[in-house]
Length: 374
Ligand code: ADP
Image 1 (cartoon, rainbow, N blue to C red):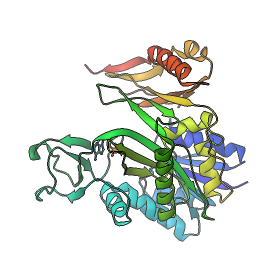
Image 2: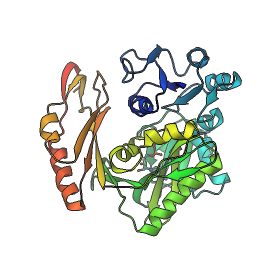
Image 3: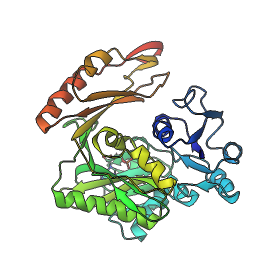
Image 4: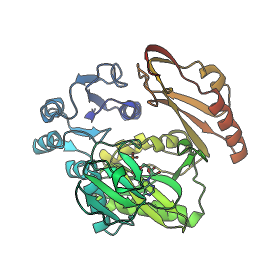
């Protein structure tokens, strides 16, 4: 039995535990919230800050392997563990690189990956790009927070940022790659984020992405090349943009399982979570082939309400063939918080579309409110 630690106890950790049990891993999880999705499920749950080097070191010092389920962790803590001979995957240097959107972007450009034109900017510096441009706070942003389109200099937030040319994006896809220590690399087929035609919000994800085979292959090659160049051990979720002139651009990457990879759990021969373990345990990587087309809809906390979530749609949704519900065990709903997801499989695109519409019409989370905001 291998003694393995996961830094972070959110839903990604929870699903890593599910897959880790099949490989008989003994799993210890570190998280700052006593009621996090992994508490009560991990073999051992340690309460502590993932951003504290001391907490991280104390958590992992007697383990064999330590991995992460989020990148906002103490790199110093990871390095201390590595210094003690504990196998840390992904490597602390990769986590450090990715934590800062500025160093990440610079590294991609220096290594020849296709990137938008950009500059690293701090308030007061001259702006080299023309407006509109995209501003990304170098640290701390996620799920679109910390990213904005700026139309004039006065729109810019006064924080260290990456400024990027505004690309004419046709599609946003992600490719989950995996690499093990032996250097074997595999990629899953691209997952497409489908946006609402008017509001810029993702309505669902789908696999296969709606792409000609050569473009899908190019996207997979790009992600594989990035995993190889970084020499990552474990998963690398690579977000790509396809522009209107059929060019791929690398947006960003995450060294861990990813929301877009949940589809692989039902639609592919191997799940992203199993693949992560195979990769960091230096086992042969699993077959990534798609066996059934699928879609994912996130179950989000409703706007304007905080409190205990309820899922009254469960029965109606589970009546649909090929549909499964995955709840993350979050005890508190806040506006747009990811509380779970629904996976749909269907033999053909029209059936998938029909079930998708039904799921979306049924998917209303109820909240037993503690406080109301507006
Ligand atoms: P996050 O870390 O929050 O996911 P992203 O870098 O993925 O931030 O950006 C969020 C969204 O902003 C993307 O999904 C895309 O729609 C848009 N975006 C990001 N970069 C650009 C760009 N250079 N040009 C046009 N749109 C962009």
